[in-house]
Image 1 (cartoon, rainbow, N blue to C red):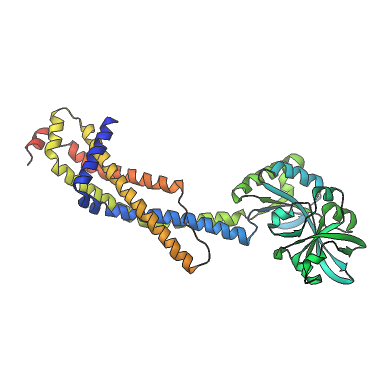
Image 2 (cartoon, rainbow, N blue to C red):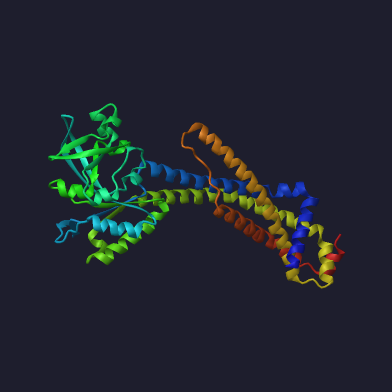
Length: 403
């Protein structure tokens, strides 16, 4: 360790003695590392922005479990002998199993003719539990029905804003009134400001099962709080299916948007690898510059090397000294390149945001720091080997006589 510290000290002294020469010789690695930092930071930023765009345009955090009604045998769809159905009890059990990762909802849909204030409209009815506000992430005028409303089959409903606007220009005044379908009246307790749901009226699941004739079978839907939690949530659900049904998860269809996120990640990885390979040329040039610095150093310090060997220094001591110097110079170049790269990439981000409305941000991760450090060490060791070998093989007598 003392030898390494001493070698690093000598390397820093040489850099101070010839700063311009060392800077010019390591300019390649500075440019290469700056480019590499920029590529990795932009790649991480692109992946983060892409995830955000997918989250806002698709239900990437959603997962749907649907009982299979057919099997595919020899590419032919064959009706299943056993088709399972989900109910409130199954949804509650899965909710307890997956609550640490997100939310569980039981959904069923139908359409009916509804009447409000002597005005009739065809509407979509969606039966739910009480978790829709977590799924919609939209504002609610009034309130949503509670867990007790679900269990007690309360005759309450929440209208989406598009449906409410078909009955009144002032949607707030609808709260407290009632709509009627299939001879049952439901009190409007809230307006859900969610344009994506269309003209819908949400009612408690048990009310749907008891009062809506010919109701469709419900599906269970999950939403993770974070995209990263979805695989764990899926695994927990599939394990529950395996434990509670004879055919296990094979009797159900599990649908997620994970594939889109994986495609995005793979695309960004290809971008990083291709651009990293291109910037690697600059790093290679920088390594050659470091080798040049050390070869000059060997020539200038030949007599010093001869004296050290004559006083007992071994070959490995000389090799360690010059490789330590090479790695030190490489790390210094990488630090400068890191600073240049970070400054450059944040400047580029500002330009990108001036011409787009994506709110793009570069992302500097721990992995980027690790990659740069590894590059510095490898370049220093690889390109410092030949000068170190050349110095170690000088004979003491010839080295001392050198002028």
